[in-house]
Length: 255
Image (cartoon, rainbow, N blue to C red; front, top):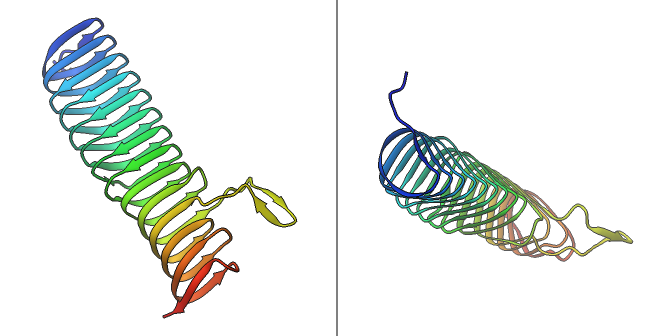
């Protein structure tokens, strides 16, 4: 049986850091110092002036960590969460507001809220239907974006799937399979789509299999390349096959 005590803040108070079982904040509380706990739950307004190591973190209120966060299992936020240091988490589920000033790394990330990372993201599986803003690179094995995403650096993944959900701006994209799809619910008149606009702007795209719709890019490189309607590609370099919708490619070069 664990001999760790629980910490519960339901009013307004300042508590010391240390090692605890469950830390619960439902009022307005500040923890002065680093915390190691089994579970951190914040449904009120909470601040930790130090690092946090926890098995799980659940934030439905407003929580701020003034240090690093090591979440061994799941970080879930439906409220407002911010961290000034690096974040390591096996899982991140964000349906609220998430702001990380340090690098974010981990396993499976599911984003349906507002996600901001100032020093890049490195994870296994990144899926976002909300609004994401990433300074630096986004690196993963699998990336699926169906919201609005800005990545200032390189998006690098084995598989990248982007579908219309607003205009996304990404510095460069690299991977094995890269697919960008426009809005499948667009109105069509006499075979032509209306009310469809660019869903991705990027400098370069490089992959083995590349299929694009409603994408603006300077250079696209690949083995098998398909350039669909709504694209504006300055130059395509391919080694095997190229299919291009009329008027979408400025220059095509087979290598």
